[in-house]
Image 1: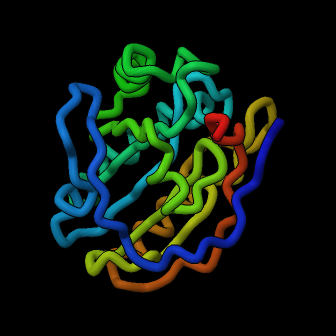
Image 2: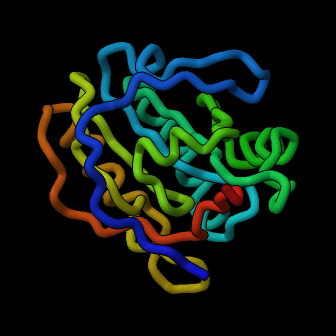
Length: 180
C-alpha cells in the first residue's frame, strides 16, 4: 500500500553515521562536506523506487557538486531483497555511484521522519533542510514522465540557500518497520 510523506520537524542535516554496503562507517555530514546534500530513503524491492532509480542515478551523475546519499531502513527479516546483496544489485543496475547506507536500527529513518521509499530530503551547503518531497510527478504505471523535475528544482534552490516550495509529498512503499 502506498504511503505519502508528511511534514517533518527535521530542519538541519543530522550528524549520523551508518555502515555503507562494504560495512564501513560513513558519516552523512562528512559526505556533504559543506555542499548541498540529497538524502533519499530507498530500497531494492519497492516499485516506486524502481521506477525512478535509473533517472536518479543519471541526475546524481550530472550533479557531482552535490552530495548524494541513499539510506535503506527496511526490516530485512521481512524483506530480504533489501539486505546488502540486493542493495548492491540495485546500485549497479541503477547506476548509483554514491554511498548507499544501511540503517539496521531504523533510528536514522525515525530521526529524519522518513515514512516511505523513495523519500527525498534536500539540504543546502549549511546543512539546512530546503526540500522534503517527491522526485517528480511520476508514479508507477502512470503517464507522467520520470524527469526529476522537483528534485532538480530543489537542488538548484539548495545551491543558492533557498527553500524549494514547489513539489509534492513523496509517495511510495511504507518503510518496513521492525516489530518493537
